[in-house]
Structure formats: structure tokens, C-alpha cells
Amino acid sequence: MDLGLRDRVVVVTGASGGIGRALADEFAAEGARLVLHGRSRLAELRRYVAGRKWRGRAIVAGGDLAKPRTADALMAKALTKWRRVDVCVANAGAYPMETLRIDRVSERRVRETIDANLLASAWTARAFFAALAKTGPRAGEGASLLLVGSTAGHFGERGHFDYSVAKAGLAGLLLTLKNEIVQIDPFGRVNMIEPGWTVTHNVRASLERPGAIARVVATMPLRQLGRAKDVAKAAAWISSPVAARHVSGQTLVVAGGMEGRIRWTADDVDEAAIRRRARED
Image (cartoon, rainbow, N blue to C red; front, side, top):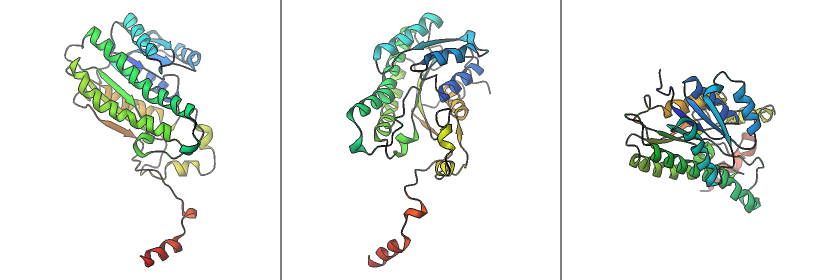
């Protein structure tokens, strides 16, 4: 299917990570022109782009999106190069690796997590709206803002309350901005995808631990691991002004049918004690 993305200008934040690179590849395969943002791995992103066949249709920008001026500069660079922005994928984020109960999490970590995962997306959205207001909509087609959330925001995640809160906050952003974008572009759309456990370079080592994969798929009817390209293909579809032209304000969970997270294993459950309490009730 032709998604109608050829020669459309697509901004992807957080493009240096596994999902970000897959997003770049997928939109490039659709013929889009790209503005790719990276932060801590910017040099790595530049090398990656230099090695792709589509490198002539992409520019790279860097900076900390927790600072509003970085998002403003990113959109300004897009307008200077391509004169407009049609699609914005707010993918940038950071996952705190250490698992800690809420009373053991430092204030610094909480603020950094909220900045990286919620406010960075908000500043990106604000800058995108400003760019869209400056250029005006493309006639007959709707612009698209896509937020990248997480199943942690959908189901919660023990030991990562800060990340869960930040990603859950994107739902409020989604439901507000889908009503605001049409003030600029009558066919403009705002949606969100929520990836679950997705295989990227950063998590491959943890999947080698005995039992890790079984734990990951324990709440999923599809007993398989999500790939970055699965997320990217969903992102391209929902960003399409053709295939998803009447889809706005929606959250698409890309997680194999995940229904939640297992709290206990068989070894944790004292069945005899539970039966005894049931009889007492």
C-alpha cells in the first residue's frame, strides 16, 4: 500500500536508538525526507545515516529536548532545509535502568525522567505546532504528530514509577492536542503508539539471561519478541495521511496483545494458605 508519505517531511526525535533507527529506515523506505534528532549518540547517528542509501534525503540535528529551545531549533532546521514539516514522531526518551521502589528513588532521577520522557515530547509538540502554523497545512492532507509512549504508561511498571508516570502523562497530551491541531490544520491528527518489550541493541544482553524471554512473553498471547521494525511499521501506518486519514486521538499498543504484567510466579504462591483463607471467609 502506498502510504502517501513520498517527499513528505518527517521529523524523528530519538533517532539514534534502535526504535529511532527503525523509524528512520521505514519512513525513508516510503520516500520521505527526514530530519533525524539524536542526543547522547549523535556521532553514531551521523555514521548510521552516512551509510544508508537514503542519506541524501536526511539531515541530522542534536541537542537536549528537555530544553524548549532545542525543539524550536530542530523545527527551524527542518524549515530551513525542507521548508515545512508534515509528520513529527516524538520518540525521544530515556529509561532509568536501575529498578527502585518509589521511596528509594532520588528527586534528581524523577525530574530527569519526567524531563526526558514527558516534557521533551511536550516541547517537541509545541515546536511542531508552531512550525505548522508558520507554513500552513498541505492542501487536502493532514499533518501528523505521533507520540511514542510505552506499556509502562498503560499498565504501570514496578520499580520504575517515574518512567510509568512520564509515559502515562503522554495520554493527557494526546487527548488535548488532537483537539488543538485542527485549529491549525483541519485534517491534522495526533496519535500515540505504545511499544512493549522490543528487541534493541540495549536489551539484547538482558535477554540472554535464563528465563528472561519466558518472563517477557508471560502476559502476551503472541509468544514472540517485538522488533523495532514492528514499531516502525505501525508508526508509518498511523502517520499516513492516506491509510489513517480518519484516525486521531488513538493509542495503538504494539506489544503482542499484552494484558498486564505477572506479579507472582508459581513459586511465589502458597496455594494452601490461599485455600485456607478462602474457607475462613
